[in-house]
Length: 300
Image: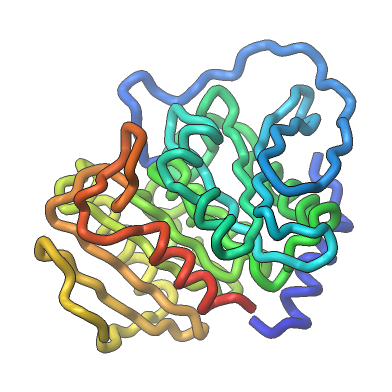
C-alpha cells in the first residue's frame, strides 16, 4: 500500500471513536456481570513495560505496552501487536514469543491486548466481545500517544491470537502491513464466506505444525486465502530446513505475499520458543526471528 493511503487509514482510525482455533473443550468464555468501567488513566510513554486499562463497553479492558530502551517518545517506531492463546494473557504470550527481547534489540514497540476472560473474539473462538474495535482503538492510541509508525504496524499471535491476526487483516483495511499467525488459522465463522478477504494488501507469514490437531483446518484456510487473493506459487529460495520442514512462497494478485513454514514434527506450538506451555525449542526454526525479518521487509 502506498504511504498516502496508509496515512489516510490511520488518520481515520484516530478520528474514530469506537464504542481460535483453540477450541478448548470447556468452550468460549461467557460474559459475566462487571462493575462500571473506571475513567481512563493517561499513561506516560517511556521505555519498559506498562500495564494499562481502557474503558470498553462498560468494563475495563487491560493491555500491556513494551517500549525498547531506545524509545525516546519522538522517533516513530514500528508496532507489533502480539496476541495470546486461549485462555491466556499478555504475560504468557510475551514469555512464549520472546517479543520483548526482540523489540529491545531491533527497536520496535509491542502491544499486548488481553482478551475478555482470557479469550479474543477471533474467527472460531473465543467469546463475543468487540475485540476488533478494541484493537483498532488501541492501535490508534499507540500512533497518537506513543508515536508508533503508521506505515509499520503488524500483528502476530498464536492459536486464538493467530486466528485474530487473520480477522484483523480483513476487518481493519489499511492498518496492518503484514501479519504472522503462529499455529493459527483462517477458518470458522466469517472465514467460511467467499467474500471475506482483505480489501487492501496484507502480507502473511505463518507456521503450521504437522502434528497440530488443527493442521488440516489451517491448510484448508490457507487454500481459501490463496484462492480469494489469487496467489500463485513462487520459487522459495533459501537453505534447506531441518527436520523435513519446508518453506513455500506465493505472490498474490494484490501485491501481497504469503509465506508458509510447514514443520512436520511440531504440534500446536511457537517454533523456537524457549518457555511456556506452547513452546517448541526444537522445531528447527525460530518464528520470532523470521517474523521480524518478514515484518521489516513489508513495512509500508
